[in-house]
Length: 266
Image (cartoon, rainbow, N blue to C red; front, side):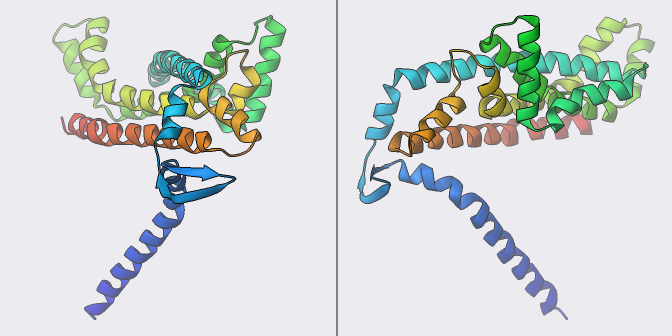
């Protein structure tokens, strides 16, 4: 009777480890292979090198795409966090039109990216807005707005209403209550939404392809390189993107989650 729980625990751990290997081992293949010489699709495991990264660092097209990606990501974060927070506050205020509001916010995120991209492309053409990084920022903001909105709204709904009531009882105005009570309690959710928004914007490809102009982002540049065949540069670029994504996860786990727990306990 005592051995059964131990056996089930071992089996569960083994299944979990197997699933983890099957899911994550393909992600590390390009990272490892990027440090070895690749010729005609074959990796020479006996010849480690950093020449691929040195070549990538001198590629001006890649660097320009990286700068465009970071610029689009930062602008998307600013717009989506500001808009998502304001929309969450509006929804939480129990005003009219909340169902329609949520439908409008979540529709672009739930639709296939190619449909959202085509809809944005048609819209930009009808209003006479030329495709550029501005249209890319608008497209990314529309896409990630639902994530930021939901993250902030969840935190707002879990916040105790007695905090706001106590602030009013102490003579604080609405602006003072928002600035000193509500906003500090929403900061962890806003940071979490910002990290998710930046990660999604950094990785977005389909919408970007449809609404971008002459300047391309890093995922679009990577997609264009893959159309010509796999090369060592692609392995190195994929490795850098994966490592950057892992870094975002570490930052979220190391700083964001403890802040959320501390805020909820307070």
